Length: 536
Image (cartoon, rainbow, N blue to C red; front, side, top):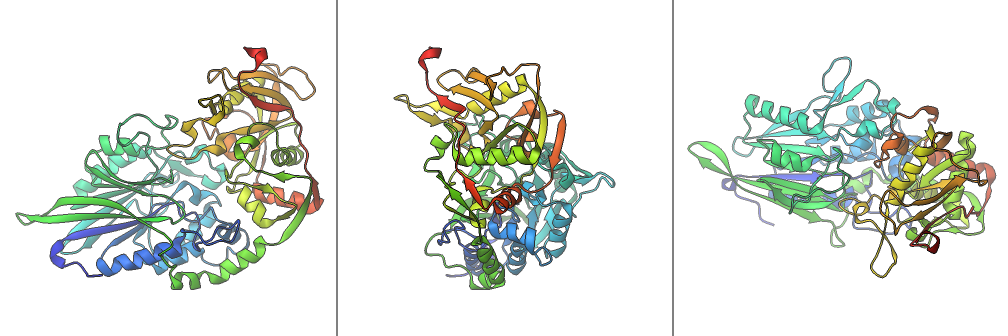
């Protein structure tokens, strides 16, 4: 592959985002090789450096959490540098942006990550309450590349983190509105730094359709990238993430890139400059996705750097911790969400036992979950409990419970021909299957042929007693949902009865280890129906 001439005056930026701890190209459920992971992405990055030796390399957040290896590191081997940081150091990243999942293991762990990194972590909107200064170093960096072309890279993180994260993990931090932070800092950088190229690396996604401009998603300010492109003057390139989408396009003259997740692609933005009266001026911009596929071999140096950690992780995952009597396998996620399933019933039972309450709800967190087979290993636990959620008990009214059930019932729609289907807003622009909850301790029925907001056609206690609108009920749920995550606004500000600050995966694993044998049972106390005769 030929190197570019210096006369080309092209600045290349390579981007990874939402790696979620995936380094080896491994499906941790099956141990099969997949087209993913930092090791394969590294091969693309090294190839691109041969063409553009001065390229800029940025990670856009959600780096350190999400894979079993990342979990194993956090829980078992935290005294060593994080394997993903080791790889980014090896590949000579110029910067990384804080994502929401960087906070999942607490501030001490995050500060260790920052300390071990040979690159800066950027986020302009996250400040220390005591100093009112950026909490993790610097908001932006500048680099001079090529023949004197000055590039500024501003880091921005979605400000929705307090809606999801354990408060102890973000203590004494403030999260400013991402859009307003971008507006303020872009203007400041333009005035103080006068760069020829200004890049915003935003761990957040798009709230509108890129082609039509029509709203997408839930209408919250979790994602604000479209507004950044259309309302903020001075952005040349906008790196995005968080939604796990594959995007390479232009919005209102701003070149945008979003390279999916888990190392399945590397984003590339090329910016060509022309000399206009002695000043470098942008002449053209191009965004593209460099996809990982079967022709890309993983980088051997990266594999070697993390080989010991990978071997230890695989051995740990294969440890048997219990067995099942009966059938807890999931053959269809849709059917699992349609009526009580032994796997879901077990999770709710464990949650109620741990919390000491009689009402619980949980979600199928991994849409590809196969439940539990006859033998349960740590691999099964971590593939079913992908997120480091803890448990929270909220005191709710009967009206809150009904409202929450209406929210969860919005997950479904009736397809042509009368079949049960999934509301498209839970699929695009981001998969949100985990925002559908299944309850234990109550009896209920959802008729999804009815309009959204009017689908709860039966609701009573487990023994047939009424759920009183003004009655008070203690309900255990994961910490993400208790904070209102997934647009469960009825939970915001409700009294917290109890917090169990232990990772849910650990709670489930410990319960199985203690029992040794668990039994597949179901309550048959709830179901989803379509146009039942009794409600016609």
